[in-house]
Image (cartoon, rainbow, N blue to C red; front, side, top):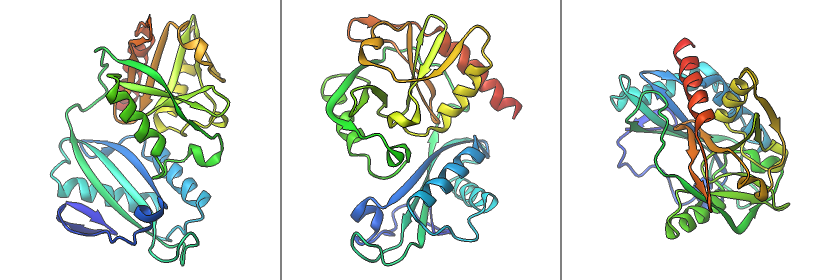
Length: 281
């Protein structure tokens, strides 16, 4: 079952027209959310990121789009798919309503919510081989729009095709200044000695929800220093550890970049603290 503007429909229903602005112009945003046994993880952060993103894209936020209303719509959809006692990946799409060309006829919005069952309730550390490479065919242009989770994901799609064709698990994206921004599906952290680095939003990386959680955990991590700073490609092979963060997997350690192999000690420590934080919240 899918939720389309508050009404549940069979997943096979034809709900989107060819004039949908998310399809026609990429005029849409989305949030990817993990729901564990009816509990939406980091819901407040997701909600405020969505509201801020809608304002940036000049979308009209409906009066009823409160945190409580959207939470109830998400859980209604999870329940309709019999996932309240399981773990689900939820994607909420928000698009501007049909009408106009580049200039919209209206800034009103519509939304839809989809669910997918996940195997694990909490975040497990995957230590399988995970090799990455730089994707250098196209570059991220730093700016406010690059921090949004919009439907304009061409560079992520092309990078994913490149990774698949060359037997990499993931790729790292560069910005137009040729510094490392993020992975195809999450934010990047680099560990060298006792310093943990992640690119600042000004470099063009996504304003990730899990990025925020990990940064908060690192700041409380005894003996480590957090730095929001540029990461050059040359630093990657000198690092002790590299890992990727997103809301579905939590932390994904990178095991190899070119000839350099990495440990996962900090990743293991942080994922334990992340799961503890979730249990206590």
